[in-house]
Amino acid sequence: MISAETILVRHSEPVTGLVDGEIVMMSISAGAYFGLNGVGSEIWNMLQEPMQVSAICDRLLARYEVDRETVMREVIRFAGEMLDRGLLRLVPPGELSA
Amino acid sequence: MAHYYEVHGLCLRSYLVLPELEAQRKENGCSADLTVTLRPDPVTEFQGGSDIRVESQRAAFRIEGVGHYDIRVGKEIAVSPEPGADPAAIRLFLLGSALGLALHQRGSLLLHASAVAIDGMAIAFMGDQGEGKSTLAAHCVIHEGAKLVGDDTLVVSFDGEGRPWAQPGIPVLKLWRDALQSLDTPTTGLRPDWYRAEKFHWPQSDSFSARPHPLREVLVLADDRQAGTGCISRITGSLAAVAIIDNTYRVEHLDDLRQRAIHFDACMRLANRIPVSRFARERRPSNIREMARLVVSHFRMGHVA
Image 1 (cartoon, rainbow over the protein chains, first blue to last red):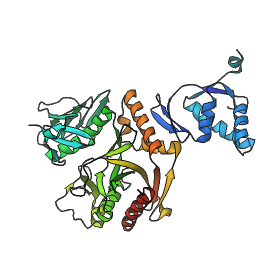
Image 2: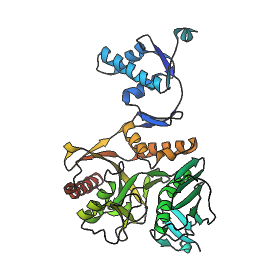
Image 3: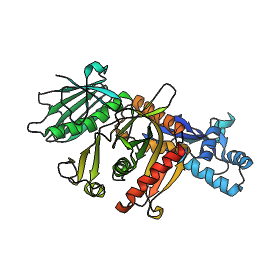
Image 4: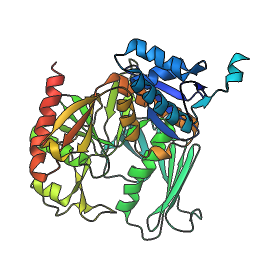
């Protein structure tokens, strides 16, 4: 279950390409290709380092005219998909402070 | 004796005569990229019937009643016909699946697309099987004065400046009976397709352009009842790139990681270089001529010299 406190980070580094600022990924393990939309690409770029969902939302809120509830919903949906694909992983809070 | 042909940007040296292609003279400077040999010995691979195996830099398949094809490092196709096989069927799978696998091994970008040239520049039509790529290409050729560059499969290559080029394919249009009827072309004398008796192979000569053309746009054909004779809208970003990836000829046959990385890179380059658009239209035979007119005027408007 993903919440505002959840910490995310990239789990693997797929082969990526860039078209009009949007990221396209080739997942080596799954043999699948998929594209991220503009916001998805931004989130992916943030997650080189572990980051809390609420912090991701803060950054997006600073850039887009949108309410917090919508952003949270979108980030959680995106994170869920990327976790399923093995491209992101959850970071236990202890790991981050260590 | 070896015969020389040019297709998909390759020079083919073939020990099988290929009347579907225009023969080249060896002294024209065509040095063979790919050799087609006949292997008369019986092949025991795939005893069970039609089957395929794709490995790194080696692929093989058997079509029961036709023959066995062995494709290596993008440089050699060995054909072993089965006794009594129809020569035209042997060539069909050679110029189709076998050549496609060889092109993948070579790292060529091979799209599931038909293409025509208008004013010396090419536009490609991508779409699923049965989406109407060939029919649209045929109407552009017959009614709009376009030249056929390729039907069903299209190699896109890149020059030193990264510009994409549409390489000429096989000068044949594969059309359903009703599509031929809409072009007032009788099916008499045309070869029916191996798998689909109502689809015919219509050879093109004067309407075919045997030279590469700069590729300027890709249209993804989509059936849409609300769209009438057609609506062309731009696809951008990752959606454009994924559309190209999805419309690669047998993308599942890109076997090893090296091939897949090369292919991915080529798709990104193409998506970054030329517009990809969605052509939504209601597919009705009565609409096709109007669609061809729309596509050609759209293309000309976007590329005024």
